[in-house]
Length: 114
Image (cartoon, rainbow, N blue to C red):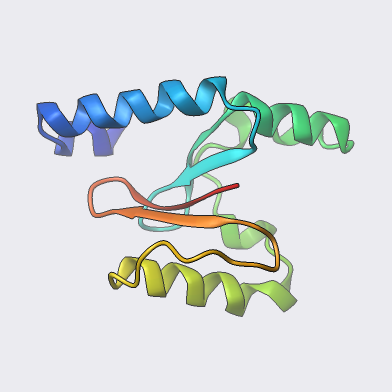
């Protein structure tokens, strides 16, 4: 992963600890890069996709895909605002409509934790 090489040792350690936690989490979670492309989806993502009839978006298949290609048009403005707010230092507010917590790091990019 290209963004890992941009981090110092402490940043890599924190990142890999976060991945370990997400791997064990039952919550559907994903991480996006700064271009809103998937760089990680946890096993709960795969389980959710499979149980909802979308096995074609499990595993490595989704890596590199643009989040906004999958977001319905009616929700794109809300997602875009959330990403902008977080990336501009607006904090980690909760999106009450779909219970997602946006996360951001200049080295990792944007994402949402469910």
